[in-house]
Length: 197
Image 1 (cartoon, helix red, strand yellow):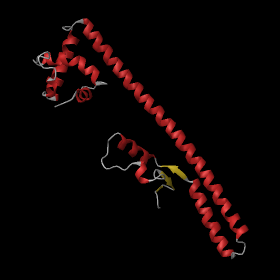
Image 2 (image 1 turned 180 degrees about the vertical axis):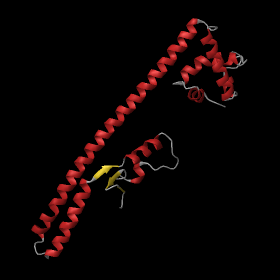
Image 3 (image 1 turned 90 degrees about the horizontal axis):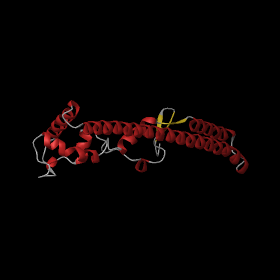
Image 4 (image 1 turned 90 degrees about the vertical axis):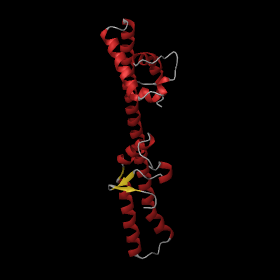
């Protein structure tokens, strides 16, 4: 039992409103009285609906349909294509803005982490003072390593692509950003930085 929305997707319509306008014509093409049963499409197969739509479009294109109908169908198709292109452009703009924001946040975070790490050794020397040189060397080496890792952070674009696909319903069982932690999707030296790692 297809819905109008499923039919719209199957026939590549932008929305089910356009399908509602064409369904009576499709019904006529496959010998169904739309007036007698307005919900006829729920018992028809997608193949029947597609055949009816193709027949309807052939009739319109051959001029057997009225000229107004042909012009309206062409206009509808051009508008739907333009709307689809506009949606793609808006999505692309949104992705670029997200990339810019993520890049800025990651850059600011790396700078802040590096500054905090630099202050650790100074604070330890000031407050403890009598640590053996070997201990100070170990602390300094560890801080330098951590600072270098912070500076090497970069976004794991595959992670964000997977999250976008999961948000669109593409992958069952995909985890959400809330359930996996704030640092997932960030990588250091090509290795994903996960909570607890």
